[in-house]
Image 1 (cartoon, rainbow, N blue to C red):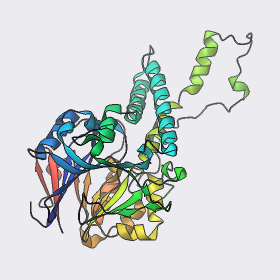
Image 2: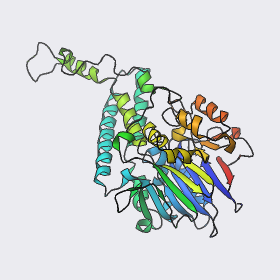
Image 3: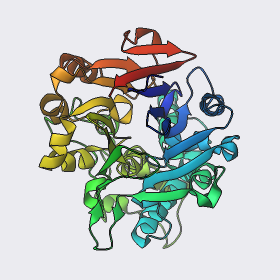
Image 4: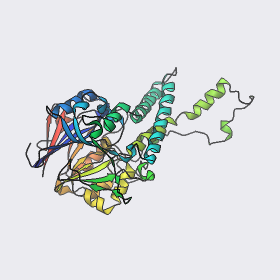
Length: 410
């Protein structure tokens, strides 16, 4: 690789993320791996992709920084696969919500885990029920995929917290870190990445921001999620209203008809709750800008509206976004990432931004949104999609072995 080019490799994991960034320095190349996971495979299984990444590192595999943007399965499941114990890793970065010594982080994680477990149990019972109509089964399967994505992913997270060749010797950072003064550290450097300045734009420490998931009207390329469009929740009785009463029975005894009636009231709850849980974990996603000289690379993970809105309302960060020359398209090109304001006001058309979307069709999810890709292209962005590698325009991208690579001059 040229000594004056940064390489960004996007692996086709299907529905998930896996990006390997290589940065030239005076002391040799430095590598950053952003995520390695999938919840619906591409042409290869996630185990094969993980092996491919490790193989691409050479005979003595080393990664200077592994970034876990958040703990969703489609971003971390690859770390449960064999081979990582042979990889020398200097630092591992995770969102502050993964810090095992942070009481607030533990509270958030435990609450999300309990909800995911309860939803999985409920969905399993409902999927095993007799007489499911095809549309209902399809919706329950989609809900189960969301819940499965949100579950613990224990083996993968164990690798990230205490695995790799250095095991406990690899430095773990939970971002944004807190300085001794109590202030959040939103800009730092590390010996692991000489010449690189890291800007931490998210996640916020404000729980209201990280769970602010859907953009208001006029702020996104699709206003309502599938759960909202479905009308889920219509007809559910008001709490404590007479609709909940079981008439003509002795106390504490429910007839089968009563049980069926009560069960029917819960129908429609699961989809929006599963979607909200999925989005809440996305809200904890790391949103980073890597500054290498004048080159700025934006990796927002699956950051949702709350994080984006906080960034766009902060002048120094919005000015930083105006310098971005590479954009990892947020959340696989979904409706609740990549706000209109970022595309319209922050992207500099003179930079010919390189944009990469790790995505594929999955169920009824509308990803990547055509309106989003069209507007990015109108800002002179050059776009590659992992699910359509042959469409990646040359010479901005090269394609080999199901990997799309971009190289940006320093």
